[in-house]
Image (cartoon, rainbow, N blue to C red; front, side):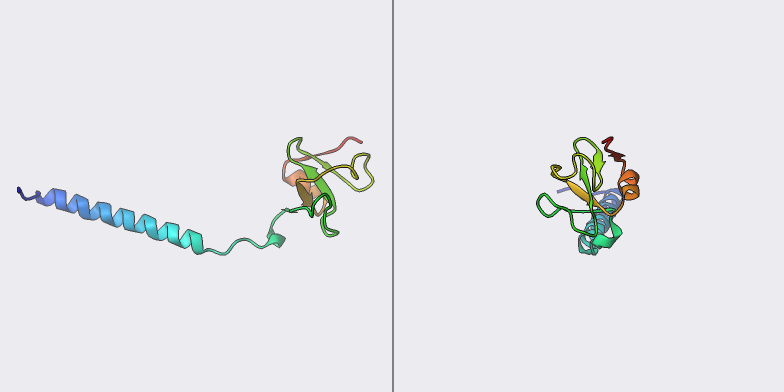
Amino acid sequence: MPAKPAAGKAKARAKRRVISATSKRKARAKTRPKAAPADRLWVEPNGSTCPESHPIKAKMSSRIFHVIGGLSYDRTQPDRCYQSPEAAETDGLRRAKR
């Protein structure tokens, strides 16, 4: 069996180093702690209601949010709940017209 040229061996070693470094980065990414819910703009709803701390209901399909006292607030099944109208607007949603 013919021996590999020296340049070929160096390339193989370099490739192994790159793969090893990539694997280490992926392993570190998996072990990083998740962001705390307080860091997020929104929280998950509890069924069809939002927690008292995040009363703004948002539908992601329409990109509209509903505030307490709005015409459709009670019948809206939220996808996300926001703490304030400003937080929902920051996330790219618009306020319901009624």
